[in-house]
Length: 270
Length: 331
Image 1: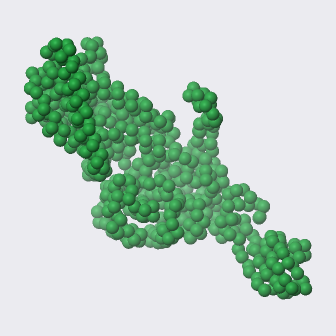
Image 2: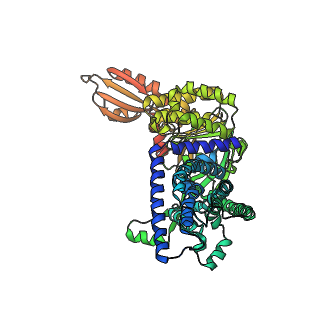
Image 3: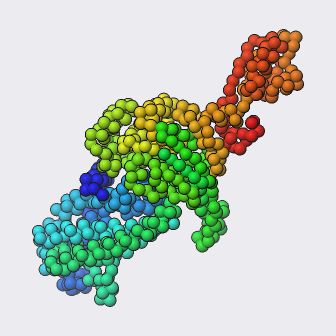
């Protein structure tokens, strides 16, 4: 796909989303306020009840910083609400129009997914400007300009991985019309095992070892730890490479599933 | 340009019995049946030709169009469009075809037409100069102006269809599939879409396959029609031939003076043709085409005629009978 087409698709998708002004502002304000209140109330109570200074290697301000940062980066990694878009295209026949274009469907969807993160990126920046100054000083997290710069490529590769991980299950819509439940489950599992709900250091040791060999942690925890200055340069490079490797493997897996599913596509109706 | 040989498509359809128990059962076991959508279709379409694909709902028209545009794979058979197998979806093939579906919007609902066209320019890699010229020409032909800068979802159905037409033809396709392009449009817009298609055909000579339930679309646009019944082609030929073959008669309508000493009598008229209606003052008689002059002269000679008209049967009625499998009754 040519770069100009890619950027065109990205911009079209972003324009589409930003044409709904009310939705744009409500999503941002409500999501930010609800998340901040829950984070603060939950961890304040846990630290007060336990009487500990550190939990899972985090102090209170550190874990609040993690919660805010994973919320902001997670929105970009997930790329808005395109997760069901492929399954919906198959279900309602909108896939037909993409099959007519002389371009590969997954590339078009990826460009759209990237376009979908532009409003999220803009929102996350604005929310970050409001939320980060509210956080106190932590001995377990250190946000610096360099850590924030390193976080950008980490978020981009995590976004690619998330897109590919949600692509193959959506192809199941070729066989089972409705894969909504599968998509919700996948979202829940990726968020839990990816560290979007809790830092993975709070999980039992054996699970942490298992998760190390799976792609989930590169989705949310890795870019967040990078942004919080908890990853050194070598580990960062390794993480980026692992993330790309997982993307390649999962992308390759999606090809035979697409080919088999495509044979069953009906385009809705006879 | 389009060659189709023994093309078949069979869908596997889940059959669900009515009732709650059947719903519960279907959670564990499902019954599938084969639904034959297209069975052994063979035909060719040449450059500059508009072929009307006619059939009742579910006859297999759209399935055939989907296979020829490469959207779905056939169960068996061969097809070649511009030298390509459609369902292989080679880029060189997809750059040369277009599909317009009257029942399904293909553009981006939340964007104005102008943005959609720009995106399509990128997708089809249309050179900027060619894009500007084609867009200007199509907009002029369809009389589209400021509407191009309004979100599509805020346009009327007719305006949206015009946008769909522009979008589909921007890359100057050599093969165009039109699946019910005038459905739901008012009479004026239907007419302008038909005029546009004729004009476009004259200037660009693409091969076109048109499906429609409106006989006016078929009569205005197509010299040749293919009639499909339950997935099978039952007629492929010119519109004129369908009338000659399936409606080889004309209807004579006659009004006579009621006070005439020689009133109309059905029994005595049966020798001339089939009496459709008859009362003492008027008559409708179905007569073989080659006997029309002779019968008309006979009627004028025998009766005190006020008025005589000779009518061709409605083409829509004839095609409807073919689609319903009743054509042989009138042959």
